[in-house]
Length: 462
Image 1 (tube, one colour):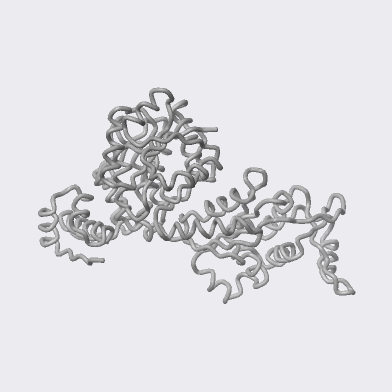
Image 2 (cartoon, one colour; image 1 turned 180 degrees about the vertical axis):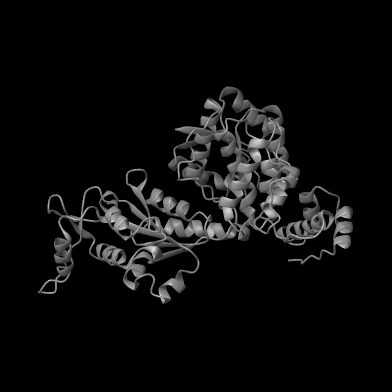
């Protein structure tokens, strides 16, 4: 069992926290002060969770501990209602930031990830498709509740959202909570194959000629009204997914004949093994990722009603990254550490201004676009340098793909447009509060007022 030193956790929360962590194989040593934490760390070199619920006081505790223990692996626990603390935690050198309610598995994964990096200083394979869903924002906390409920059932799950919003991560989270690591998570991209290839992938090689296939289709309803069963081979995706999850990407693109066979299998939950003729149960949990326009596809008949019903017993909407900006600082820090590991570089830090810019950008490509941007920035940085605002600006396009303004005009005009939109976005992020926005921008309140007047930026208080 792993152990962690938990500093400054409120006493009423300790019992529940200890239980959540223990379920993920993590034991807890408690400390209330920096002196107490240092005393424990002298005896045992443990990773540290620092609770930041007391705001500035807790942040100072984290900084004091970092001063005395520069090499100690540290994580922060924040209240999701205080997104500003996430940025402060990243700036204080926290390897990761967790929001309440604390997920024991996320903590265990993060400890394994960071320990492996410290040991090998090389790619450690921790980006294993399971990943983590950052749930600091209220919208993502709602998603996590739905994921927990879905994990208690075996019904179909339809996960709707834009590309890059973590639809597969949500599916894997449901699968992991329900099955642990003892069942298969089988992915099929219905848009990546033609009809014959997709049919072969899902059901396996047809046993016999086209005449046999035609005969099998006629047997779907026999004379007394009982249902025929689909045949599949032992190397088919449906066979492999028994007892686990079949995750369908772009299911709307599946040809009609494949949709018919899928709907039939999900209805009957049985099939015939072609090699042996044996009838077997097909306990397969179907999940599908779809884009936000899925209702149009249903109305237009591009996905069969019977298949859609079986896939959409439970529906989960994944929010866009721009609608959950509280998650961006911790997510950016996570990507940054992962990218540095893959390049065999020491972990780098993001400056306050860089974090503020990332939190303010529109991210039309969601988390995938955020990662791509950082992947383009990190390799060209000199060793030891933090990622600053100027590093990001050098990789941001002015064609609307990554920023909120259009191209055209002189460099001075483009710069003014950027400042105007950037300041407006930061103000919106901080609900119009000048002091918080000025701190995020790294300027004095008086300078921010001056900038707002010269650039004609208005603010909306909430």
